Length: 402
Picture 1: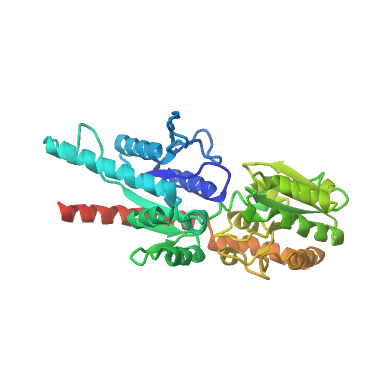
Picture 2: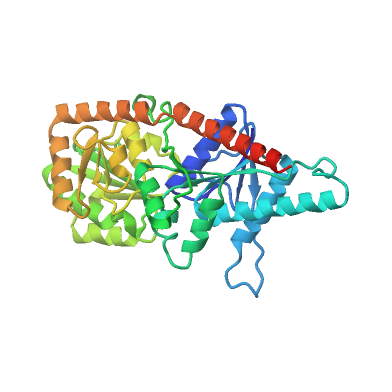
């Protein structure tokens, strides 16, 4: 198959999953075309069967806000036309699925023009005028942006115009149906996944020798430091843990609330034991050398960083919200508490770290569970099957129309 993938290429779970999916599909023999405004952060510079098409957005004085969605639609149209894509897979309903629908309408108009001039559906070596549209919902597009009155109608439209819709968790599927009333849409749940070879603790060398001086334990957090991640809670939890079990907190990522986290560390008197390392693309070595992962978020549609931690044999302490309860098994692979329960999360972390046998059992269970339920091979095969069904269904509908 020839597959187009559009995602947000910057630091975040949806872009990471979309990129890893594309790489895995290419390894299975498909041609994969990434269409976005910059190279996805987890995409190497060259891989066989992987292509990158940059979306150029013109800047004119008339446009206070450059229309990326329209520029994306044009680029999608060009790539489908020139490379004969079978499917466009959009990660996030808006603007990506919206742009894909526009691109497909442009292809249809071109086919009608060709037909009117007696050229049939094809013009020279041009590809067919149709392409299947698959949309994967990751969370923010549904739970925050899509429910804004300014975007609700276009989000609903984009979902309903997709040929196939997937959500990364059962929680997000139900939230989509509840929020948008898409009763005629079939939303399939296909979870995020991990590469078991990459997130294998034994395959990485220790990286936190300095942070472990004096026998300290390593608590880790990875995110884009948005308000939803509650990074101040992370520092407060750490301060309580450190008072009972000497530790170092490693904060990976960047975003609008980083300064708040740094200030919280100073106020809690633990600034010298908190390390802010900024954005790091290759997080597997860091996870392999951590003892505990903290994710006290106030909403989470899945929690890819938590899954990567579990796969690395790192128990997760976090909030019992959204799709995170489908990823972390409370009491087995980690501990989940109510949002804002800093004392409860700290107590859970201390209990795990103080009991070596319990920590070891949780770590082993975490790695095994992640591989059993979220393996790359199984999830990528689900997407392949979905593509094939969706393409076949569109061809069948076109044959009936003809």
